[in-house]
Amino acid sequence: MEQVDKRWFERMLDNIIFNGIKHNPPHITIKLSISVETEFISIEVKDDGVGMDESVLENLFERYYRGTNTSEKKEGSGLGMDIAKAICELHGGHIVVRSAPGVGTAITMKLPILR
Image 1 (cartoon, rainbow, N blue to C red):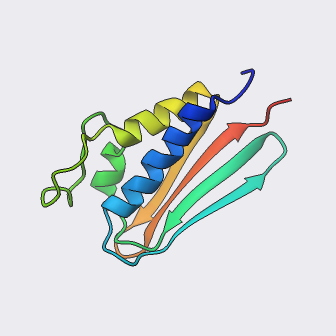
Image 2 (cartoon, helix red, strand yellow):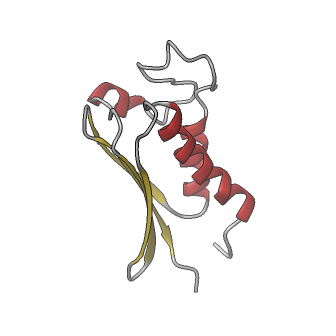
């Protein structure tokens, strides 16, 4: 990997942050944190929203999957998280998701440090 594509990198973050906004009630907190490790930079998007159960987590990155709480909301195609994962992987990274109902969600992207 030579460099990060700024446009795609922004799209990856936009998709993840927008999902946190779209699938939670108003007034939740979304925090973005960045840490540098030996070989990777970690970017975490964490919210204190409704969280996801195991069945949603298992399908989160499936194309066109819209989760269980999206029936009342018509916006979105179900592609955002699939696209975010693909962009992260194209940059040599991977995504880890931690979530539980009533606790919130943390999505961590680990990307290799460019040398």
